[in-house]
Length: 245
Image (cartoon, rainbow, N blue to C red; front, side, top):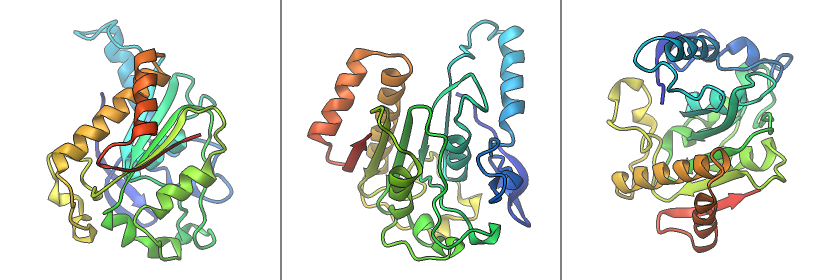
């Protein structure tokens, strides 16, 4: 797993800690023509160097890269997960992620942007995500639920039909339930709602589901497929809903 952070323009005219959002590629006339993850080419180049020399030489499977992220990082991960952009990317996942388009970029209110829809995808949302719920003004609307844009992304941004795309809504999870340890310096916690379920159990569920998703659809492990089917059919106390298409 590779993580990073840098300071750059995260929203038009706003500079902050960012996962690397290519603002120019979010515009109506350019979206979908190139990846929105501006840091990804440099990360892949560095991984290639690490895999060629040093203690990890030959240890990394750079032909099967999975993109994943949280919030804006998850957004650019799922928007950039296409073999047309990066041939070595084979799947993507994201928590607290959606493709609602900001009106400041020139989009109509409540627009959901399409995704490449060429690879396995796992979207996860929390029912107590106050950051998403309290940021709806950026999209010219008011979300009915904290998970509304996440659900709309699953239903509208991809066609599916391969049974390798999933939407899981986690009961009681807030925007930062995915992250540990909690970082109060991100400038967003004041928007969030309290989590209403034990967050260690929430993270355990999400980690297990992401692992099963990767094992099933990247590693082609039959036992992982079976366990995903069990979750789909039997549920889990912390899963509000789980869909596949």
